[in-house]
Image (cartoon, rainbow over all chains, first blue to last red; front, side, top):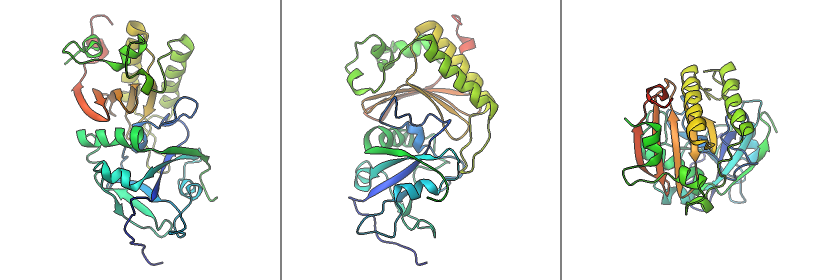
Length: 146
Length: 149
């Protein structure tokens, strides 16, 4: 499958998986916003945390929120945070297109990576992503194939 | 390094939105989504959560998410006891960071966030954000260093 290298439009919506259970990163009964830790890089995020470009009329090849959740493998399932690409750019957060065979809309935030996860700037970006740039958090979706 | 008392009282002219909110004096209160509710049941829930993490400490899930280490859990437990006994201010959220650490989110929101960040080795930092910008950050002593504990 050919790589999709379309530049990311400012109006494009982006999805970020949030583990649904046991982490407390998001509790819809207490808060409409996720924790900044929902954007904290783990040891596999060497080149940056992952997001996915949302399926749209212009990009039917990209995944739906449910499909993005289904790419996760934790059986507890996932919430999905929705953000807008232009908002991230306006906040100084770089986006890089990194298509994968099963997610052509896969992107990474290269500066929000594991090695720099404790940097002042990364701490501030995580706060911004959670408290200012998350438009909404979608319902809990199951992991596995939708 | 500062004690809990020094940190939360912000004696150097800095404020503690977490403490202000509990006194219902904070202009940031309206922007925060949850106020501390210091019932025993609420505290028990937080502490039970730490105990649950203890049963899967430092395990890594299918996506590389590492649950809190024993060191992080132990230190978080100590700090929660300090917060309960001294302030009776319930943190807004206690979150597994995904790298073995724990964030004790005293208060979070678009205007103010105040966090005790416990890393996987049990080291603790205090972080204060104003409008999502980091305005204060420093290491904290362990609660055992505090004479009131």
